[in-house]
Length: 311
Image (tube, one colour):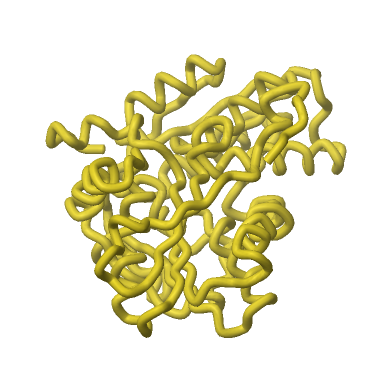
């Protein structure tokens, strides 16, 4: 596909490719497809929502481009990278509140983009960084909180971009099932509700860490970064979810290596968890079924897991 030359990296977000995991599913009798969101600028799907939240805040008059205003957001993951990119290009100061157990490599990358990174104690709960961000906002009322977990601009961009890319790439059809991780809930909600509008019987499966459940509002501390954030996010339409599949950390790590060696794909930990769940989903469906899942990010931020370290 020919792409126009952008004026900045923000202009070339989206239109990520999709591949069939042909070698991994050779004897399965079902097709599993993976949309390579890791090929977005910034290396994940989160750059989509980060930019859209900033643009919507500008449209609403909350932010003025080039003003140096401070944006604050509780995130140690890929949304932080997307916001850091947007802030660098559009002229904002960015403060990110990050759980202290998040990848040191990611923390270093965020600082390299120019973001100020403040750490929150993850032992205080899955939303400790969110609580700390609210304290800082109270102390600095002129800062702007984008609040990805409740911001409608989060699922909105997946409605009007990501889902339509999938529909186009499937030739105007929708697969039998969609398997997606749930962090803020925007990705599953936006893609899921738009694809289900095209196909009412689309089966949507949520990927959660072992012993966690969105449907039962049950969370435990885990090492699958980006999955199960310790609450049911406001933007998540829980009613879209037909079922959940729990994935062990060790199984996700093993799948990272397996994908590298069979498909040549170096995906991140939550992305590998998606594939583990997609294969399980495929086994539950009739032969010939098509299952869609997503590669959210790259293995490069998680290479330490191969050495037996925490992610």
